[in-house]
Length: 368
Image 1 (tube, rainbow, N blue to C red):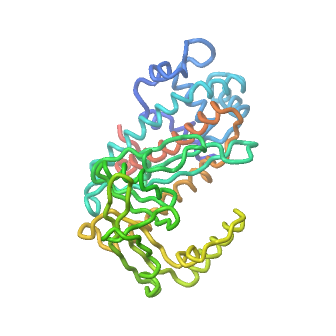
Image 2: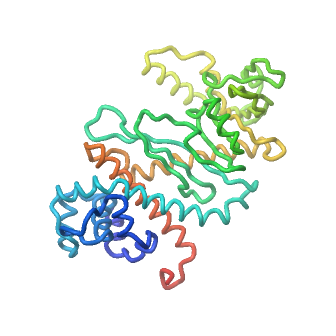
Image 3: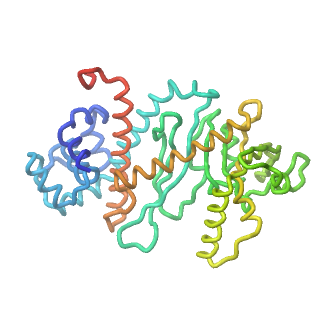
């Protein structure tokens, strides 16, 4: 985290360029700066203090001491905590500003990639509050390919499930998701907006039909598949309002991969106090996805290769939780927890914005 502290300390003029020009007005509009009283005289000073605490990995007490050394406004730890709680909506507005900025830079290039579609990976991760017995917050996150930049996020409580309905899409979008998104009704509403999907198949939650409307069981058609070989079948599914044509695409795993998948399935059933289904163990020998992209647009090997790219969002979560320490909250109050997470996401987006800018840096440094 020392590199992050150095970034906020020494390169602040560069960071400031990526933020709204009307920073003071933005802070007042969102309740972070209610009046010009006290030690903190500007929104810029307040944001630097908050980022020293959230992004720099400093405690409230350490932040106050470091601020005094650097000549920033002198607050006590409790006053800084209250400022953080009041800044939740402001930090959310700043993250929205950065997402829009990054998205505008991506839109000129992404539709020329591969099949002329905007390719996105959607997933969610849970964040624990300090001292809690379970996860308390959920971060829904969309990563753009091939740039690997965040183009949308949503912060909710743990009771808000992973669902395609959350993600705003445009006609032609291609979204990659895992098993958690096997909701036929939600997928129907999603597809009605003109987007397409590649989703990992969950046999227990996503019943399929063949092209004639009869129940479709993939296993009899996949048992003859050789290791490392792929196969596809034309299927359809009922969203509750209409039948949607789709393709089931499958690849047989290596024996070692299949063994690991079977072991995980057994362990999960053991933890849940249930018995694992024989079909579940058989499905563990395959990677199976459902896609609504027509075969003439994307062939079978391309579908499987695209789904492999879904792993990039897991790496994004790993970076957030290891490098930026998003994984567990050092807060016990809902308002400060939300503000702290918004600050972490703002930090991640500022880093992404710096990386975007780095592509155009001149040899002598930052642009004028």
